[in-house]
Length: 304
Image (cartoon, rainbow, N blue to C red; front, top):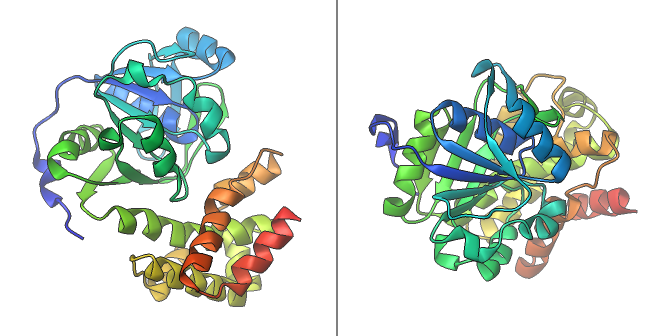
């Protein structure tokens, strides 16, 4: 995988117009920091959220960026051409949310989805200009506690983009300039599967047993190790080798009270991204003939 370490040295980027579909934990945070950096941000959401954002703006409470409030535009549908469209809804809401972004409104905008899973790109490329949809993954812990209020718990926000460097470098520079460390690579498969192979064990175990990562590390260590190895095997079969030992070491650095976003959704009674995360692993495992007994059992228990 080739990366571009020089992006942080690029000059500040021009003001751009950015649509954010789904100003929740991830989208609201990005909308906030991009607006604070001087860009025009249009949040696309439901009527109640739109009303709140128009009146109060976005309030970000962040370990990394500090606490601030910033103004954004908001609408229930994208009605004009933009430079960039960030798609940050949950996978469970994707189909309905995309009705708010008509293809003709995008013009030649770059479309970057920051969703969990690996299968949403094909959906977006069928709907929009396939050449304008780029793979992206984000690493952050951020939650919408109320419409327009974002609690950003992690001391970092990092994005990996994958695709043509000349197309993605200006966006990466813009995000980095706003404080979101962003890298560009040419390996889409690696970008997507590296995250999914790490996320799936965390999400499935914390949700299945209603345990924090600290409890999973101690009470369910054997299952955690098995899941990490299964996910790595599937990722490798898809063309993105990952190191199980590194994943386990990273889990061990997480604060003991950390929860996955799927676990938080379960606690709130919200739809779960089981199909986008565990389901994607199962389907890839079947395609490549990789045995994944622990993933299969946990998915059966979670869906049953």
